[in-house]
Image (cartoon, rainbow, N blue to C red; front, side):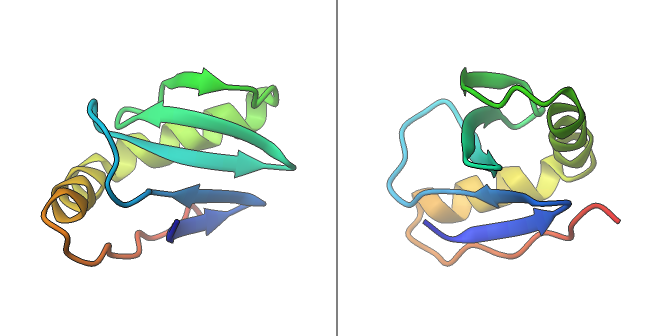
Length: 86
């Protein structure tokens, strides 16, 4: 599961051969979450409001790149790294 971005202790990943709808995974302090491309947690147990806010902000800033990575993953192409929050 490739890490496509990392910031403030948050790891963002996208699995290969994933199912619809388009989504990404985040990990923060051992807590996991599955997020739609707008940054809304659709499954998981990340409880930190700060981490959730940062993930949502990052996803909204990089929605286009997330969609491109989803398309690459579906086509069997490598995923691109996405800039972290600073």
